[in-house]
Image (cartoon, rainbow, N blue to C red):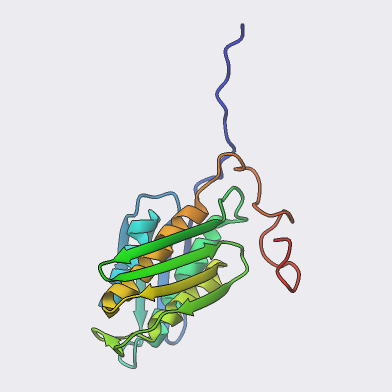
Length: 218
């Protein structure tokens, strides 16, 4: 009797990518490894943003390196938004045609008195629903309104349909940190390789992105 051969799944090659972006306002470089262990090296010049991107890396298990220089003497807007753009582009590039991914992810994150739900579809059809409010205009030196800008830029460039909803909470730090941790956990689930369909794009069309005007059959 012939010895049974182990099943070999056609997992994609190493899912790594680097992206650079240079404008008159910012110079940013990001490198990601989707199949990492959550190792990070982040320097944006904005301490709170560094902390949030580190949380994203740690809880998604995506290795992340970010180096950013921006016009912080004006404000933090350009650097925050462009970090979201570049990191999102790197994630999208590393996913390639998104073959084999689970595609959907969801996480509900408690943080003391705060509870936040993040749901996403790595559909290559970018869209953001942001139901998060803050009671303070700043956290440290960072304007709280910039967090939506970061999530918008990230979702648009990573090709994510992304819903972020703070269900309740009082502490503004807890609220925003739970948003990033929720994104991390949902993204971790969505980009994981499904061993039963590692050779297929998770769509009846055979490709992710585009589609009909009402979003059907994706």
